[in-house]
Amino acid sequence: MFQPFNPIEEVVKHALIVEEASDYLPELFKKYLNGEDIKDIVDKVDKLEDDADDIKRNFRQYLKKGHLYRFERADLLDFIDMQDKIIDLIEDVAKKMTFNRIDFDEEHKKMIYSVVDEIENMLDHFKKTVKYINIILESDFAKNTIKNQEDDIAEMKWFEKDVDNKLFEFGKWLYSQKDILHPIDFIFIRELVLLLSRIADVTQNVCDRIHILINE
Figure 1 (cartoon, one colour):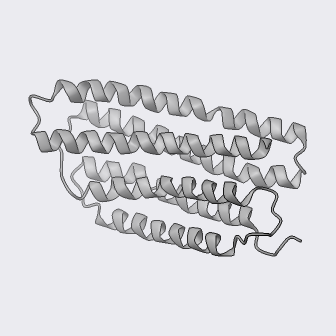
Figure 2: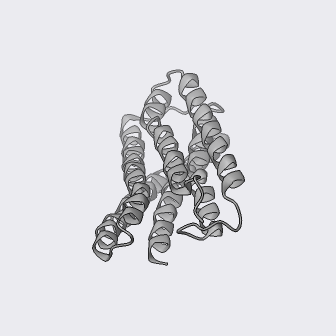
């Protein structure tokens, strides 16, 4: 029989925390790139990551073996782990920024802002996509409902492609500076850019996993 614990509601609650953390990315980068103090934002992101971990921990505790769920228990556990990776990466970005300060010219600040804005768009879409699971459950997996939600999920690949293209252009500029930048600064910027790329990749993977869940 079904138990009161609703794993989908917990997944959505966890997604809302991930999305809230992502809302700080534009402000975080704006302050960092303008040489302002970012400690308050780093602390807020760190607290949200702790909250997300609490939900994930409780999720694992209450998602019992042998109970009936609309989705496989192993799939739900894998899903929330993957979703949690997004906020882990956001926290990694925030904390890494406390290690070093880099001055960028206005042109390359704009390139970074553009990438961050696109990632924020992805994460807004991600939150909506996670909520689709509830909509589909309430429709009892009606084909027209699944089709409507799949069309929106498919849009995510265009967000990721745009992020990849922008990061590729930024990467070309970065490697053109390899003989100018201090090696530590070069590595620092490269790692920061790779973390942004990972956020986009994992967000896309989460939405792909939703597609798999609703079609199993």
